[in-house]
Length: 253
Image (tube, rainbow, N blue to C red; front, top):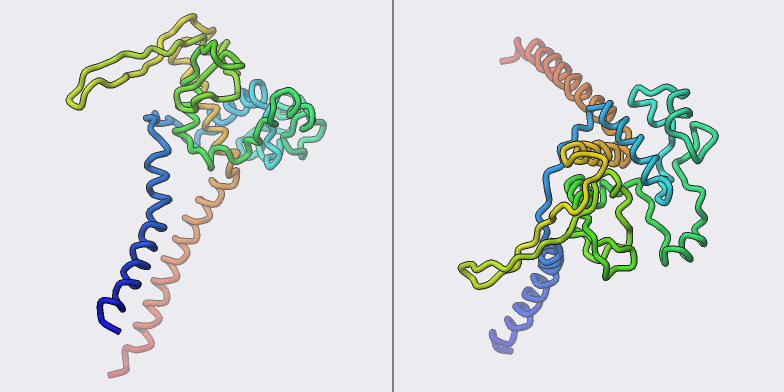
């Protein structure tokens, strides 16, 4: 067998392997064309997360459940059991219950086509920046069933639940000449104002996203705090072990 015949299958397999490994990268590069805004959240701001929880139970929990989140986890934010029951529990009786909705899955499928997804870990799957941009990018579109569309999520099936706060926006498309030819530039313009100013609405969305991030991992703050304590303990232990080693070997030549 000649060297050429031996090398050819090897090179082919290497090329095929590289192509397979590159497919996810190509898919990620081609999947997201939208420019995401930076979400101004702070997972250490308990007051912001409390406000976000209030927005969540008033506007999101009507359709979307959070079955992996229990109401009593909000006590980690400084809320008392009485405050949680009085201000945040509208679909449950006990503070230890998960944040579910009264709507049955069969009814949701009949009404909406598909049941609204659970939002317990949506911040971990989508990311805070995506959620922050998405909730501010709705616009009126008469061609859709709901009458709404979204720049970040084209042809989204969910209507704009916060439209009374933000108001109604319209999509503006402009043709611009560039170095590579004519391009389409899209932007959102305000049609009707909402009950909040744009800055106030952005703050409400930031609080909501902050809560969604907290809900995706409620023990994150405790885990980080324990991690720092462990690192400090290991540092102290290292010093003690080093001093012990020096004392043990000082007479050994």
